[in-house]
Image 1: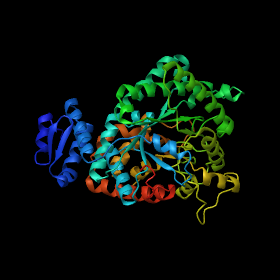
Image 2: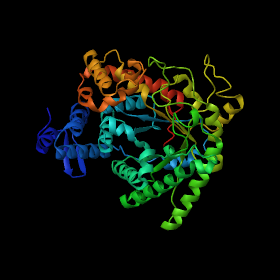
Image 3: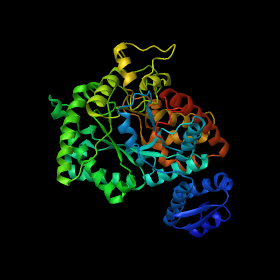
Image 4: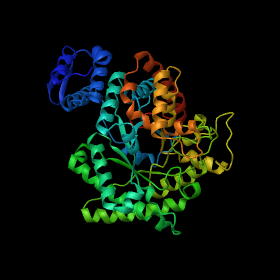
Length: 483
């Protein structure tokens, strides 16, 4: 049952946390804070119908985090250095969808165990909608999880795929651009100091010339870059030495011309146009606009994984590591970017994750020259992928977990099929698997309210996945790249 007003919350704090002022607290009982209080505060911050109670709980979480030395920060400076750093490290960017608090707890538990501080937690524009999780709520859940797990390091939050809708853009470019600007503003206000500007939906593949293909993409990316730099100044982040880290994208993930992967020509056309536009906008504004530090490319994957007609994952490696090597080298050497970004990777065989970081194939894992030549393996070893985005596999871990209640699973499946029915000729099981991500928001309360023993069992499995599949294979275990 929710608390009815702010006074109820203040009573809860007695003997555990003392409120000194609006932005300052004193921790009286650390054990009770982590064992009892933080669970209740984050729950109220998420579900209480009273906005004043929600705001108070979120402010308390921020203040407790600050007291414990947990800060929200940007990877900008680290990514600028990464452009010239050949360490075999690829930064994991993990999408935290449903059961956000419990999932984030698993990430931080694994990170503490493995001495990992180089990681990003993110939420995509589409996920904000279907998980019913606005940026301020997302931030509160992540910070609360760090408090719970006593993870006392800077935290890097990211707005993933802040993407323009191509059809709506054609109808009214200014209106669609304004929507993204508003979302960026909301995200930065909530402490998401990394933003991926995904204008790849605007690439015009009907054009034959590379510049004409990428023209609208790089122009809009430059305009939004300028907008972000203005917001930094307005928020005073520049005085705190925080520069929002930005990424661009040259090929819509899972799409393009008949699935064509991104090319060096695509990259050069985008970067040439983007840098020229950024230079023009810098002169207009009277100060130098810092640009993107990374570039997402299409390399053969798709969000949600590649599945057969029954919805089962096809585990065979589909990603072109040749693409990542060739574009990564150009991105780093010619444009001083941290490197390329790989999306849609979580459903791949985790043994191939080592390749992103430039390590050789593990024993017993073979990859064809069509996907990675010997020459490109050497290039990739010197130019590892900057960042890999990971999401669906951990959603699957939660929803398919042996401990997950069967009655709730059936309710979720029924709701998904009713609201997202199979297309003509589509297997009902595949339709469910493809669309069940949309259930996170509708069943958010049910999922957060699962018995603690079930949440513990799910979290234990996630900890193992993050530790063994992600941190170990991507080279961030003990690397402290962000320190």
